[in-house]
Image 1 (cartoon, rainbow, N blue to C red):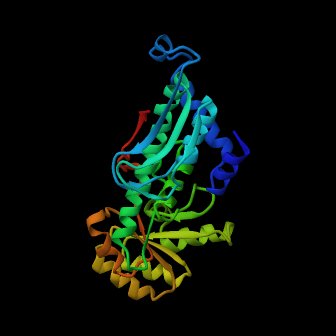
Image 2: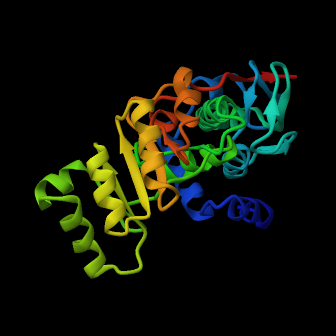
Length: 285
């Protein structure tokens, strides 16, 4: 990987070694031989083409695709940057190199670009739906194994905010923790006794739990499966003493109804687990 691409990935908050390992895994999945392209094209034949958006949206994953091209010996030139809005027919990047190599890189680059751009595009829809409110959309741990860093990066490209990256960087006390511990207070204090400085968020299903959480000093509360009217009551009850995040069954068509209650975040697992791929294609010159 070139120093320039390494720097771009690091600037995006991505681990270059992790990206390269993912690319090599994807290449290995396709096997050692391309039994379609190799009989048709000689090793010295070359091709050039452009990766073009087929619809309007937000692009993400251009430097990740760059890692695919570098690993396969294909020259490329990015025409857009991650997070840019793009329109149907717009060229995202151009490629040139041995025909066999371009065709080997094509699907892997597209798999990454279309998936990450789909997440960024969906995130931007949520961001736009809540424009004018203080609320921001936030992702979850509902990610594909091995792709969490990239999927959460795509959320950032779309204007969203990342929640915790894993189980070790922040605590989230959920309903099963509370049920097994016996109460919000017992679960929260058990964590605080071991990790006094750790960020802790507590999930609350009722206003009574919200009241309990605030009284014991919880400063980040997840409002789980509450109707907007109840969320508004929680906002009034908390009165700025804690950050509030809405979660559970949220949909884009009611995002604004939730945002105007005064919550700080909307937790949307669908950003990563259900985003539709963004349509991009490679056209040879």
